[in-house]
Image (cartoon, rainbow, N blue to C red; front, top):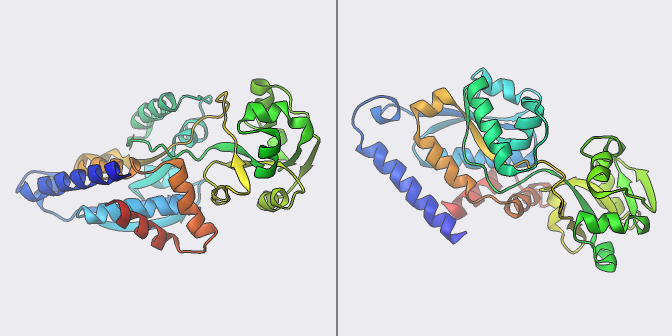
Length: 300
């Protein structure tokens, strides 16, 4: 983290020096106001990260308009039609949901595929991706993890007959749910399997009504490591969903320094860090703007 902070400070200094040194020309070198619109999807993590982007850009001399809490179903349209200029996206979402391509499991291959396709189809650039991965996962009660020595999904498969699965129904049918897991890991012969509402999964596992449930890999309650263990996808069944800023090409051409500013943010974000930021909002009840500001102040 210290190295990330030093790198960030150097990058910001370079950006500001270049901006101040320039006295003519086009784009951001002209001395004109630098205005951008930062958006986010309508959930905690995306709002936090978008706000960090906004703060970083403001410190680099931009005037930032915020358009947060955009429905996931329309956020792509919002950037392609110019309602927003920048927002945090996930490589897996770009690949599977937007481009409707087959799932890939190598994070560099996924990133390079979406980067090329977005540039060609939508005139949008994917900047550097963060190590933070908000993808599909499975978690297990720590008591069960300790009892049976389960830390990865192959361990889970071998011990499924001792464990109670808390499904959300659709997970039993989806290609990236039990059918896909079975193809990669072998059959999961649970001791029992019951369907619960997604919002109840943490409570039913914590209260010993179940042992295992699906989750996304940056969900806030995964910070409760005395209760829950996120299992390693040791056979790389799921595609990566790495966070990255995406920017309209028109805006990036006008203000190329945006890339340096936001890439430096991404360099500080890993899965554990993002999970902890989510917990401050979803568990501790803080406002996402306050959490983002605290984090920005800690890295700039």
